Amino acid sequence: NLKGDHRCVKMLRSFDYRGHICLVFELLGPNLYEILRANAFKPFSVTEIRALSYQVLEALCHAHAKGVVHTDVKPENVLFQEQLHKRRTSPILSKGGRL
Image 1 (spheres, rainbow, N blue to C red):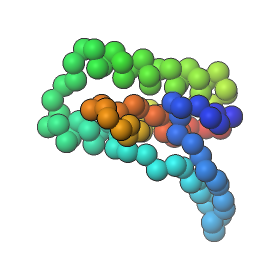
Image 2: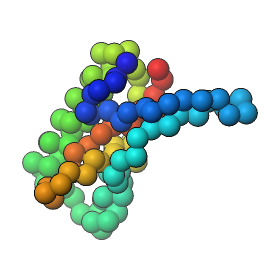
Image 3: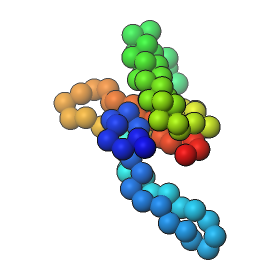
Image 4: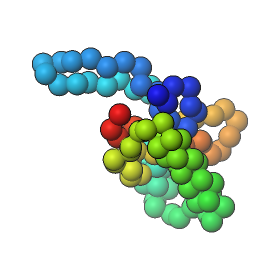
């Protein structure tokens, strides 16, 4: 259970629709790919890469410790949470994994 962790997107509910399991997650800001595209794919600084990598790895370690395996780590699944008065945003890892 990853409830309450600030580095993992919150699942709000799940339901069955015509034999398909549907998951509803909180709405967050842009993903890493969208941010890269909006900045013409200009590279981040080494400091920004370190900070982002640390936060993503922290989320993956937390999920792994809780028995969750993320099976789809990619820029589109690194979501950012908007924070007031900050130029950069804080990444949140979306759960594209197995529970």
